[in-house]
Length: 99
Image 1 (cartoon, helix red, strand yellow):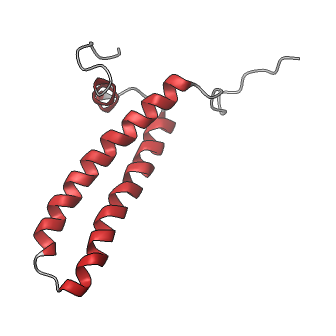
Image 2 (cartoon, rainbow, N blue to C red; image 1 turned 90 degrees about the vertical axis):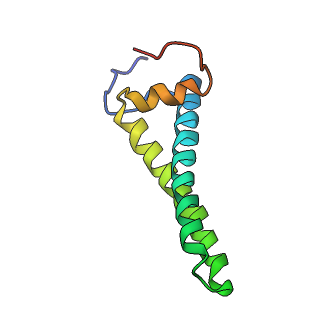
Image 3 (cartoon, rainbow, N blue to C red; image 1 turned 90 degrees about the horizontal axis):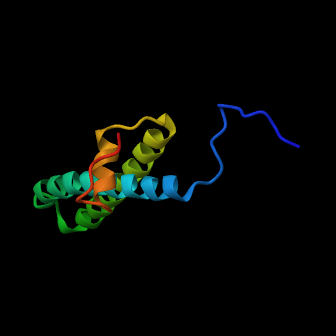
């Protein structure tokens, strides 16, 4: 028995789409992590030693949460942007971007 397709439901698990989402997450984690590391270096020297571990935890956890959220939002939008081109270049740096 076949069911009519519903545009509100995501397609079945697609390994290619999953790999692309992983690449988007890596890109987001690198970008947010680099910004966080820069901010951590600037702020970290002005704190006492007792607060530095809390700061390191925050500057490590917050970028990962932001990377997960922004990846999910981007994938659910289901639109190809320049960010997708950059993420795909991680795996295939010498190929032309997806049209």
